[in-house]
Image: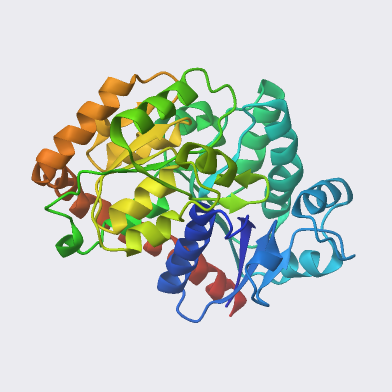
Length: 364
């Protein structure tokens, strides 16, 4: 069965790469014989022939230029053929359908609303894996809502997205893909002894308000390991992290987690927090978008998610002390939710499999 995976970005952003991997896992569990073709904004970074560029047929090496050209000119012939041939279209999870700023809105419209339009027009069944959708200006929100109404299943990972777009009629609340993955995590990995030196994952924020003051305060108080989650060209955490760490070569979060020392991970990127959790390290999330609260509520640790732009240093420090001194209570809160999360994971796989089976029945 031919599966088209759409809305992928770049593995240079580790969180986005994780979501692509998790989307593939869901598809293969639901459709074991799936032949997946993935559409990405930075296809070359994946380094495999089954990932194709969302760009015109002419070779475009700059992903940002590719987004602009594809949004204006439309997808090239091979992509249109891929949409036409698909038995099932699956959109990766994430938060790409949004317009918090004008620049973000232009990128989202050209790169993602244009893909959504093609999915909505397709005769193949379609599912959007857990998303945060919005905010959008009212006219764009109405357009997106009309397009989502033509998708068979739209999974949203936070209550605000579900409420704002309820009129689409196809939205259902599911946990984030990385949260669903945690439902099957090996509890033996969960750290029972925590190193005194935490890890901090920072990123630039639009309208940061008190965020940089918070980072400086955490640096002074904790002397943390500063780690990088994303190196994508227009989503690069290295410059900020290098300044905070006082080094030109700060480590990648995945390398820090692989080192074996269990630390509290304070991450501004949600999927930095989720990567830490899956590796057995407790985490505090400094959230800047709606998705963070939904994920941590689903995991039973909502008290450890804070607004990155206005939380005070002492609140974060208190959370670090609490977890370091008593990690068992933290993990007990998570473990209480894991059976329900695992059940939702099975449900999602079954729903995707059901759409594929219905299509196969039509094909026969």
